[in-house]
Image 1 (cartoon, rainbow, N blue to C red):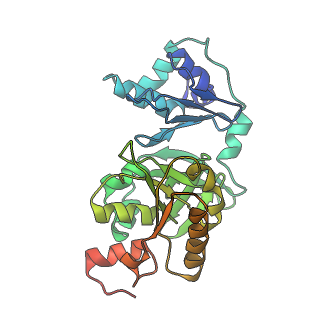
Image 2 (cartoon, rainbow, N blue to C red):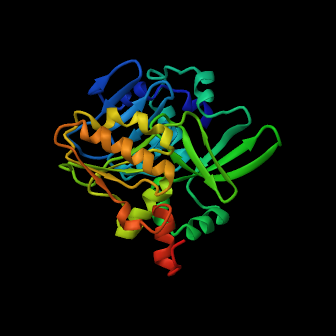
Length: 304
């Protein structure tokens, strides 16, 4: 069994084969108690259409091969890609309900760009780019992937940082490129505190990582929602309503679009009983966004 064959195996059926039962299951997604750690509330999601998974409590995600690697590691066993493929194959074919390969490929392709590889961040140009944005590589590796793309129009490869969203797509950045592959959507990061009653809202992942860097933390105590685009503000409601949040911290930009979106977010929060809106812009009021403030504070450059 090779990687591409393994990636076509139903993630839900595979989890069932190792004794995992869905706590909530419908045609679109399934939720489980995490197989990678001990928890009481299901926070491990499988997106059935995309055949990918995400563990909100760690947070990590990926395809079936990624999962097998993490699962073997959690059991103290060898966990290379070869080990993962061997483990999947050794379970037998009873669970091997295959998903539609064409459907899966459509998630990761656009008219000109296709994902060829997803790996840990190690390209020196990307590491230097992170350094210029004030983000340490150890923190970046917890949230970002190195994405190798193929441009079908130019027959060229390019490397970017990739930040995974809730629809299985990636927000992409490198010094010369900014874009998205797959469906544009928000990213949700579970906070450290199980009893947290708040959430933070950021426009992009560099702002999110900058705030964490300033606090010298790997995660907030509260949950975090990264919009990846102000146009994704409309997707916020299902993640906020009926979840008992009491505080909403807004870290949006200080430009015209960011200010307008902050007002929309404020109106939304005010429509929910018991939810207090807290605008954090005074922290970085002399700067366009959180990242430019963060870079200035660590390099002693004046605000612009």
